[in-house]
Picture 1 (cartoon, helix red, strand yellow):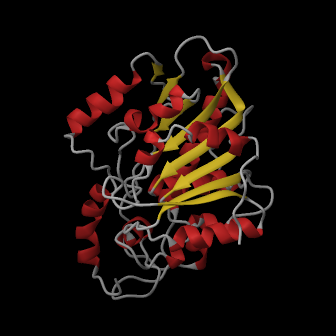
Picture 2 (tube, rainbow, N blue to C red; picture 1 turned 135 degrees about the vertical axis):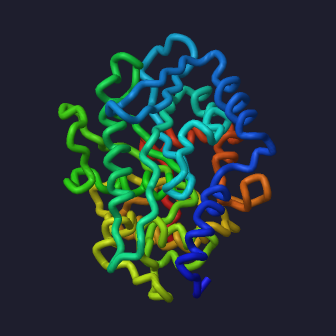
Picture 3 (cartoon, one colour; picture 1 turned 180 degrees about the horizontal axis):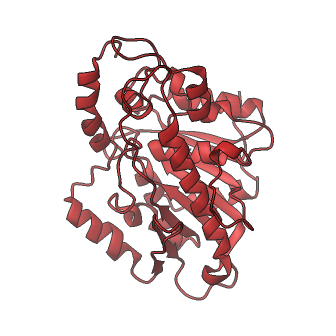
Length: 327
């Protein structure tokens, strides 16, 4: 996709956001009822407000736990602009983890607003979203005694745009530009394992794949200079790019990507894995076999929902027992 007018990119924005949602063969109402409500039967569910504005859904293991539960914080996809925190059948995807002993939080964040073409672009959309994610993590830690959460075993995960945000939030601990201003001060937003799938990790090289026009809409720039769009500046690329924030102090990353993903091509994950390996931060990299059910590799939550071992894999990652497959 080398040439696309602003009009064309704008027209594709809604289409691509829709593509980033799951194809379950259900209506949205059926999806919400079956995947969100029925799948959590027997589990404790809370719906607190974590910052006075945004909600999160918290799923807790059934019954009285003998010890605090490890936590998985999940960030929905939808092209940064989809307000899908409850409408993506989250329960149907990840209740598997709750059944394996995890407390799972689905976090709402502010949908990105289209940014008009600007010189160098702007990363303000995703910086705001990352701050909200970190606020939610701090809030969860502040409520650990209430919900019996193990704040020393926190996984930050996400798919598609949520994968990008999970990586960016997880790898920018302590960087002031990404920290929320009014979160509980006695708790930090450090996580212990990052688990992104199907994410964009370097905006500057995201010039192929069906999802590329989303960059223009969300950041107000393009990876390369085409027609009315200006190329993204180094500042925008750095601010929005998880691949540019990797250092040896970061949590390890368990990376997953579909081998035929047409929305975000696998070269994004390949390059990210190489950088993580260079800094000793790769827990493991899985290239999954894609099929129609997973939208050819872009909706890997199906893989997690049907995998009886995913909880054990994440626990191994938290304990630093996964083998990094660096070449």
